[in-house]
Image (tube, rainbow, N blue to C red; front, side, top):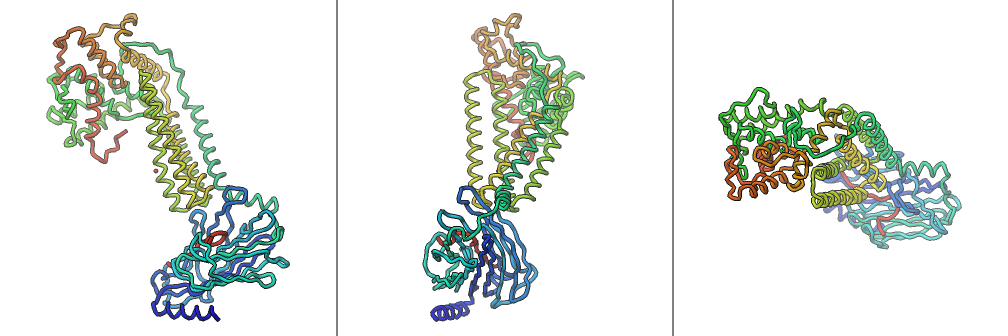
Length: 625
């Protein structure tokens, strides 16, 4: 009687305000001896064409924490869906560990008024085997409905001969333990009914304790099926990673291993026919293309040869043509630079107003150097890498199809993949700097920075793993993030490792390593090298472009400044025509200033440049659409 009066009053109030509400939510839960639940939900809703325009949706969480630890996943299968006594179209969409059933058609609008929905579905693994008893905890309505629910009733039918040893009911928002409901049992059935209307985002959860053994434990075969359901995302993910790893290691072993390096000794002779830009390209190996060092080294090589002057290098560097005519055998990349200056009337300022001219110059320089090196000094093996990259994409797509990850989750995963890419790029740059640095203190600092980047990557992985677990469950989060980030790291690593110098290229690298060793050696140690030339302005200028290309212009410039100070304290011995703003200390930053100015002058889009109530099974909620 009390229930009827409350319902009538709530209905009259809701109709007067013309609110969209769930007038009644009735659920029949039939528990079989094998633990399978067959649930029939009858949901009476009032539509006003606001949130409920085409129909309703129902969310069903499938993930749960297993008693022994680790994530589990329940099955969910729709048997039938009806509206107002007729079959109604529906679609199922996975959102991580939640299945959303959307009822209705996008092309059809509901009439305003009352509608009766009936859903029948089956699910397993809702009974948990505790010490001394079996437990069914079932969230009847879920706590995700954005509408009030005026009345909720539930009937749990137990297997023949099974009576509950205890039962309880909870109401309210998720986590609350309200008792605004009645519960009783008759024979092998347990009944639950609310004593008040539930507000939006409130629900009803029932909890039953059954005699131990009332529900059959899973057979070995069924337990194996459950294990696969819980872990197939992990198996797919790490299996795909293994396939990619096997491919890349096999290819690297076959075609990517570098020739054995020769013995490196200090040397001051320049490699015959090798320009500073080509030297930089071969020395850097995997960091191909036009680099700041290559552009700066080419400009300085032209300057010390008398074809350019470098003015105002510390602010806005300007390349000024001299009257000297370049020879016919000038390296192609240096000819591109000369022509760029000539096309600007003999004076090219490295600033944004000349961005298109500078971009064209760098593109020609890059193309010239690449044509001179690729296939001759360096074997890029790009075709093998391209196959591996396509294999990685196919593995990712296959995982997307086979796993439980949804479209939105996959998009978020792709965004996060930018992080390991840039961290990996930073680590590679630091490793190259360690390779070039003659200073133990600098090496220690760089190793520390690599450790910081590595720790940042681990922390970021843990953060995104925790974030994704809330949406897709632990197994899918671990599998998808490990696969996506792992493939990024694998492709990035093997893009570098699969390239190798030819035999002739390795000889050139050994030569350049010896030249770097000489350029970075202190003056007092150079004097102990048999046959080493005496420092002079001519010797300094000859090797300066190569010092810039090999990243050791700083120690080379300091050696020259020290020699110049000891040779002529007044500083009048050296006054280079090509560098009007000369000071001995300025040489240390000349290459950096030129390279930075050139690349910072590029257009912005240039490609050059160096991611309670509510507890138990069931639940979720729903809404209108």
